[in-house]
Length: 328
Image 1 (cartoon, rainbow, N blue to C red):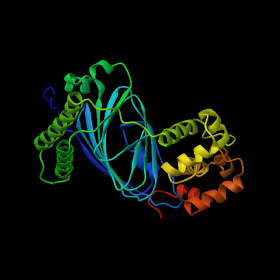
Image 2 (cartoon, rainbow, N blue to C red):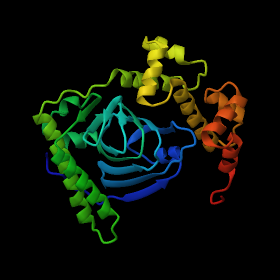
Image 3 (cartoon, rainbow, N blue to C red):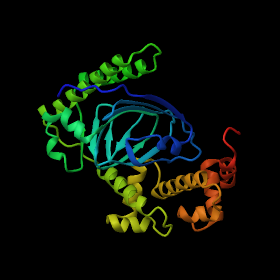
């Protein structure tokens, strides 16, 4: 790794959210970032600790305390490289692969699709692409400069622990009242040193690509195709099976195996999440129009689905969104 050039001191922010879409909006690492609840009446509590360590690099610790199934859909910008390491109480799917805290995911210019079944914490390092190639010039990524890429790296246990320890110390230091900018920069340099060790390990040890199971692949492709048809209620299970050239039973078994829910329940929950976002951001819109935009052709049925999923009617969500800030 090239010596890390430290620049002017960065800024640190800690943000707490009790709404998944509000939480998603605070990220600068992703493009078109959104979160979906996939279980009815599930509370959300998320914390983002964000440190712009350098003009070209940012480190973020994301903690989601909710013990329910959550989905993230976003895009890594083509001009950025993002490295993610997650710890979770249960299985996590990243782009169709099951990962644990042993894996690092590094990507640029690709979709980023995550499904977490329980509470999760992630360390996210986003870097300007040119800066990444300069810092880690010797690890074989330069050839990918003009292309999108993603890699899953499974380094040694010692490397994983060192990265976790350095990250934990870094954020503890940022939250301390007596820390100095010099100490923050030195701490971030140690984290980047750990990243270099992980990339060097991948270069030195030939690793087989992390394979997707057949059922995880079917779910991943289904989510991708459905996101393109979100507004079309006529697009359903049979259409999806036709595009994927699989049977309805195979689709159902895949969703139940991976997400512990049926494909129809997944479709409905994603549409309801989108409708809730519309109601909160455009509270003057009519419920009927919102239902249609979210792919529900029957407003009455939509209201019942909404009540079952969120524990309140759409009108209550609108009323709350119309209240002046600061009023309960």
